Image (cartoon, rainbow, N blue to C red; front, side, top):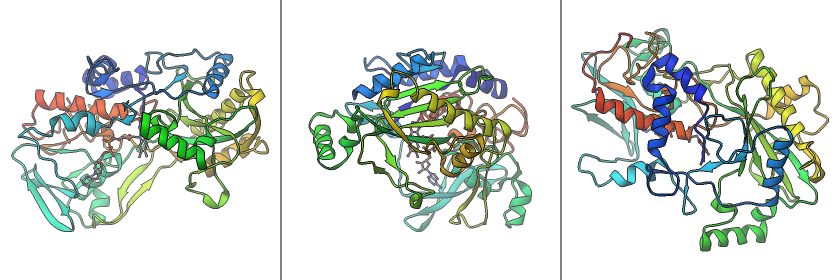
Length: 447
Ligand SMILES: Cc1cc2nc3c(=O)[nH]c(=O)nc-3n(C[C@H](O)[C@H](O)[C@H](O)COP(=O)(O)OP(=O)(O)OC[C@H]3O[C@@H](n4cnc5c(N)ncnc54)[C@H](O)[C@@H]3O)c2cc1C
């Protein structure tokens, strides 16, 4: 996984919404506490740079420098703007997931019981206090009761779903579906944000890129290299080089993230809207540009009282003028990057979207058609000191007792970058707050 902390300004905005326990000072400390940069003196989460390098990666970086981007040894510095190699959660050539970092060392604790294969449907309340959860395990109904608190951590799509099925959400919708309203809270399932991204594909000349390492005999070689030595293209993340840039000149901090990939994946029309990953036969590369802070917000709403019914996810992407301008500016920025002398001689042609897509209107239309979410959903149970927020600054669900949410749904303001680092930091922070402020009473007051 690519490991990105985001911008310090993101956490300044968090502090504005949720108070100092979520500001940059606190979150920086949290990141430092969870990170281990390979010297075994740090926290549980392994951060490494990845060892796979090839000539194109340096050409990417040189092209960025020609566009006045600073070459960064670490893209997680306090000033995010620049270009360099991404950090990853990789340990000895294997993904170092949150489960491996946090859960594995704790598995033998007598007060921890991990149960898998369970689907939680609802939180159960007695007298306004959460006392347990129900759902199914292997198709059979289950109910778990707690003497303590319920902590919901089902992610930015499923936490608001479970809350709505539990009667906490937009009152009118719940009533319409025949669900009892425990707390009328329109913010449950509102404010959905994701990073919307778009690929530009290029055919290379005089540069091999890495397509040949993922096809036929080359793929076999890459697999053996990984199995025998834990090195090569299989031992790294999906893109080695990243950049945080200002595509719109009015932006004070980076508004766009670039992933520069030394391979290319075909996106034939018949594969849309979800392209099948088909590595191209010729040498290719891609630039993925994604918005850091689009202003459009979507919703996650249940459409039925039946928990097995699909969610209604309405992202509302590109619904603001800023987002549409940024979408076009990102594509133009990526095109300027490949025109730089360090890389231009190695570009044979732009394969997708293709230079025939040139006016702002054409770019926007193609962006609408081919862009995909970055799987970075946040903010659907937003935290805040205001009474309309779903959770307070200690992550307690307002209006009931004994229930907290601890995942990316609580993010008050979107993060400028990949979201896994902040998910882990939020979980770690949640544990600290939980120890410090056990839930005692119904929360409904601003804190
Ligand atoms: C394919 C993919 C690649 C990604 N790559 C990167 C990357 O390189 N770098 C990066 O920073 N981020 C990446 N992300 C994003 C990152 O993984 C997420 O932002 C992060 O995991 C969100 O954490 P979370 O705890 O909020 O939710 P989740 O990680 O989604 O955790 C929620 C958990 O709740 C469980 N759950 C949900 N509903 C229920 C239910 N009803 N009952 C019981 N359990 C339930 C789920 O199974 C899941 O285990 C990627 C995401 C995806 C999908």
